[in-house]
Length: 238
Image (cartoon, rainbow, N blue to C red; front, side, top):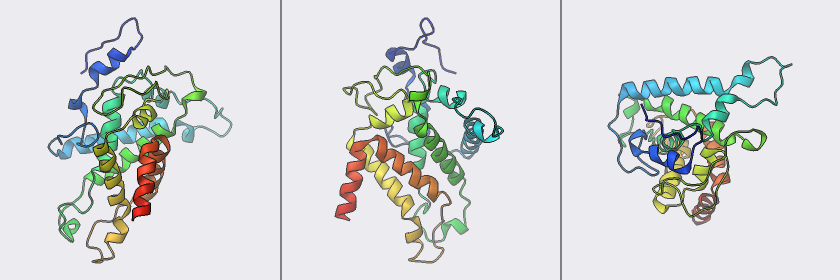
C-alpha cells in the first residue's frame, strides 16, 4: 500500500511527487532504466486488471441508447485526474510495456512455435487503456486540475502547467532524447512486424493489435510535438 500524503483533502504538487516512485513501474523505458525480472503471474494479473479497467471505462457501451451520452464516465475521470495518486507510474508502465515489447523475442526464427507468448495480451490491453486515457477530454468535465510539477526523470519541470488530463500532461512533458528513441524504436518495431514476416514466412510471431498501435502512435504524436517532429524527420531520412 501507499501512505497517504493528502492535506485537507487537496492534492498539491509535493503530494503527487512524493509517491511517483520508480518502484511501481512495470517495465524499463521512459523514466526507468532497470527492467524488473519477468514474472508470468504478475503479467497475467495485470492483464486481467487492465481488462477490468477497460470494462469500467466503456460504461457507455452498456447503456441503452436513450441514456444521456453526455455524462462523463466517472472511472475515466478519476483515473486521469490528480485524484489518481498512481497516475505517473501507471502512465510510464503502460507506455513502457507497449514500446519494450519485442514479438521476435531473442531473434531466433520460429521461436514462437516453441514458446508461448504471455506478454502480448498485456501489451494489447496496455495500448487500449492508453488510448482511452489519452482520448479523454477534461474540458467537458469538472475533474481536478494539475499544478504542473512532475518528476524530473521523465518530464520537463520547466514547462508551464499542462492539460488537466494527467496522462496527456505527462506525455506532453517527455523531453529526453533517449526516451524519444525508445518510444520511436518500439513503435517502429511493432509496425514493421508484418514486413519482417516476408523474409521467412511465419518465422516471427504476428501481432494482433495493429489498429490499436496506429491509434496510439497518432495520439503520441498529437500530444508531444517534439516526438511528432522526430517521427517526421525519420520518415524523410528513411
